[in-house]
Image (cartoon, rainbow, N blue to C red; front, side, top):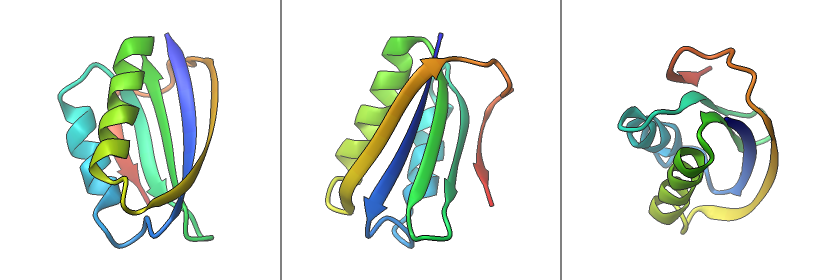
Length: 89
């Protein structure tokens, strides 16, 4: 199990980014959250099997590629702290 934290930059707020991520995550076996950041970015934190995490991130990036200017990602061992996937405020 892995944990991936991705910060997206660009025109990523106000374009349905969080809802797209929530819908994409609802069909898989991943947990975590997505939220808007005060600096205009969006943070995605997702945990699960490596293939599931990679598939979710790829789907989000494919659907929203025109809004993403750049991304910063880090990976670590999953903590198991989440019970589902949610939008955080």
